[in-house]
Image (cartoon, rainbow, N blue to C red; front, top):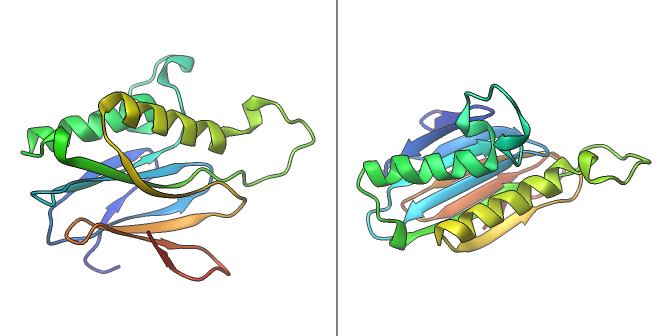
Length: 161
């Protein structure tokens, strides 16, 4: 991962076409990779929670699906990407712990995936592939030049979507 741009938790970064970008430790969080198909300008957001309106005093827009995905798209457009040419791949959204209580409040991963999908749909950005759900963490690497989204998980084969 020497030359990869690193994206922290509740963070987002742009990635030029000749680089790669990564984020570690996606549990219930979702890694949203977006690329402009023509320019190969890319970006990655590490979304932690589904809805910014449920939290008061929120100043980190990258933390939430509703604001983080929109901010990534805004920054990509400011850098010259066109929304009409953008496509996305998503990974993460696991349920890391088993609970007796089956309420929606404990299903953060599932809610994150639903919120990311809703925001991408609202923005008119199609999802080309996803690796979401189940009960294991993921580390992802995204390469805008090829569109490869590499998913690594302990005890699982490396998967490219």
